[in-house]
Picture: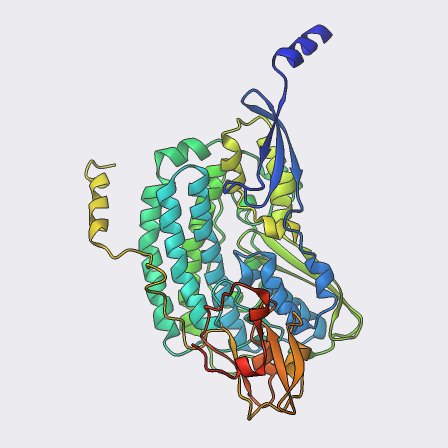
Length: 373
Length: 120
């Protein structure tokens, strides 16, 4: 027996294949794949390429300044981070934002979710070698970025939600422009269905690849679409509603299979749901104030606050301890990508072939900047 | 899947491209875009609120013509617009000027004279 192992090691040694950090299919994430021929035996992740120390930086800044900083935690989904931080400060101070401010926040957060998912369609197509999908998806992404620009003044980093509401109301004609973009995107979704989701290549590359059941997924810390793809019906927006989500009628998209294709369809379904939510909320928009300006520099009483919101990738939680000043004493961010990349990904890759690694990676939709923070 | 489906690509030949030929044409920035700041020398009271609120500590208060004015290091600026929002006399404003790349760091420091110049 021992001789056989030795023989195998000499003639067929386990190879170490690097994955990332400078490859478009990995983002800024580095991992070493221990391979036995084509089969991956083990994946050793090396996080930290995008560590910028946000949690420490936040301790030195005012609440309103932190709102500008949290954008950078996840570049592809900045609104969710702002939503989380603004809400946790409001919770700590004990004051709620005005109704109209909450509506604007929810609309922008849902547009952010569409933005993130469309970007993801692009990178998934890129990982699967379907380049036309990448080009078209990133072209459509520009439409929502333009909406961001009109509403907030910033393209990628909106710096828009602050404790106490939003920094400005929608400009005139925003509703019409937003509805036009949503109509366009709905039309484009048919194209994505034909080009990406019903494509033979995508079926072959994603079906029965990277499968886990609901128990394993929950144990590995999966949240959001990855958990819903295993059949667990969970959504923070519905279970613990915040901001204007109780006003919107939506359902959490769930699948049963738990493989890469189910995760892809889950996100595809979420885009449709978000489009309908933005439409509903734009119709129901109330009148009134958008912001309580004093709250941005308000002192939070001694104590702590905890807030969870549903980002495009899953559950995003903020825990803030306050020492009675207008700066946080300590902030802890629980990003969804941390467990996607560091616990689920190595688990799913074990036993898969090398070619499946990027497919599994992007079917989980991790964000390396959210993982490292 | 029908046989005619692949031929639907042909219609894209008659559509406008998604991209722009950048140096010659560019997207029009929106009116409320958060680009480079512009300073009104008459209105500025030199209170230093902009320097205090700046998250990146990119603003410094300097003497100019015997009065105090902000000097902005655009290399550090994150264009969040807090300085303009908290300016009590509305002297500092954000403009739609976004093309502010330069070859060396020293050029990125905008003193009161450069800041008060008209935005492109």
